[in-house]
Image (cartoon, rainbow, N blue to C red; front, side, top):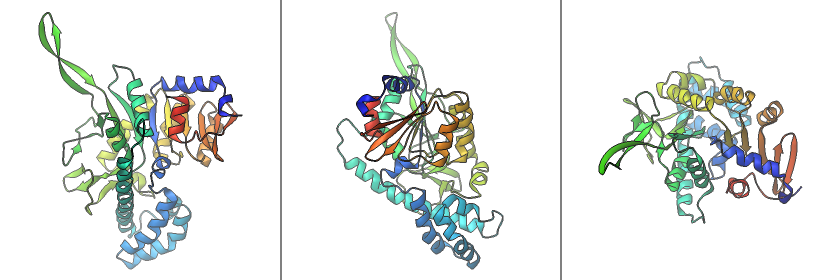
Length: 358
């Protein structure tokens, strides 16, 4: 079946989906397209870099015993290191530092390349954000974007789209998390004519709310608590959640991560639809609330290069979910139990938007 033969009902379902203003969920597959490392590449880097960053024999020996398993599967390999062992704190610190160094270097290079490119009509992520932003109801205070990625590509694409962004931080040079609630409705003061006089009115200023449950390379750990500083290349420790047995412990004991996750879960619980870009459904932080919403019939679309075992399981359990994957030089679209093939690479965001949305 060619792209021209894709059923009209398939197009109608996707277009109706976007009228629901979906929550956008972005995973590592998105950033990989811009040169950021996926889990496999990150595991290869950490296997060597972490060993060199460790200072005690005990930590180095523990790491050496686990390195083959880590190369095979980063999360599973790290989960094999006992959480309570004396060396775990040193290993976590090295993991966080070496992960941040790699992501920061790659993100700087990716952003420089993006800024240097002239793309007719704008970059696909900016066009998607604009579509979600402009297509949302006029009286809504925000659209919701969630990413498990540490990089700041989405922040850049919001800037390029000239869309107001709310990360939960306030300030200018060293931004601090906003006092509870972390995300708040923004208002602008405007002058309106009323009975031949100008009156001050307050109107909602719509924003993109960006939830980063794993932290960000732009978040630094300081003695005064976490701060957000863009383009900081210092050796300051990054506030990020690394894979492994301390994943939940790190997040749960940190107020910022706890509040970020609470706000994110509330956005997912209220979502009318969910659009997943480059997300493999391998993250336990997000699985629970998403599966409950899908079980309740929430529409969802998954656009990614390759299906993971977890995606295949999800499609089996929730056949109403639409998915678009790479298939040779083209794409396969999973829809209502059917596999619709197209010669066009519709799994790429630019092609997907041009075919179904724009």
